[in-house]
Length: 336
Ligand code: MG
Figure 1: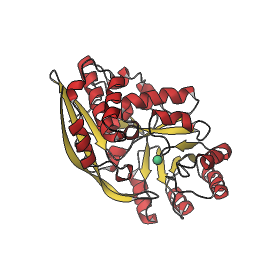
Figure 2: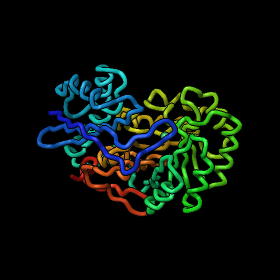
Figure 3: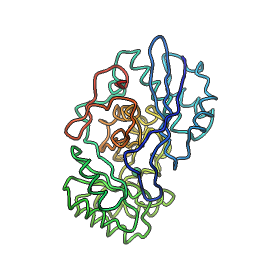
């Protein structure tokens, strides 16, 4: 196998603001793995608050000896090899894992969704995320979200109700809410869950600090709508810790180090009777298609990454009636 990669700066259509950060672009690493005339494509999206960068990804890739990976691919051995090189670095590990899955599908002449056991008919609608902004910009963004059947709203500042009310003045689509650990007071948070339910909110992501399972568990027990752990749940080992704390977990390939471990997390979450959301970072069609290969196995899909960027180097995945449509191409279905 032959591994090549290019750093790329993904431009966002709008400055993206969540409870703790704001930014206008995302560094990504585009990865290709060639084997016997086939090319697998992968991507690392390295949002700054997760701690990875072009520099850290290049340093990790320089330590990868691709001749250690043989075909047929033993994905369990691959992730153990990556973890033996360095801890952390989940996004760049995901990039190689995604490229290997794309390559594997192309060699086997089968779509990755099929190899991963997904049924395209079970694809949930995808939410479209709106960051924290002024009321004027919120209304503009909601209008841009026409075509989506669910909107996800970033909360966690002191004007949460105002933001929801602004959105409700222009649309009645169901909402998901992501507080990104921004809530602090227990009783206020509980009151908020009831108010949000009245506003047609269907779930709340990571209301309180990821390091405070007790407060999140207290709220989950009392909230009328599901509470989903996102920042608190990164890799496979975190799934068991979510039981009793959250209603469900948000799996992202850039946290889980790729498809292999995300697939294991889905199976484990089902065993524990946890609900499952699959989410993304701001990313190209490449990483989104990788997430989509597992999306039919989840309850909620938040894979709007390619819709939030202005210089996606790949074709947009097929999309209609608020849902992505999986194609029958071998591999991930990335189209150049
Ligand atoms: Mg989140």
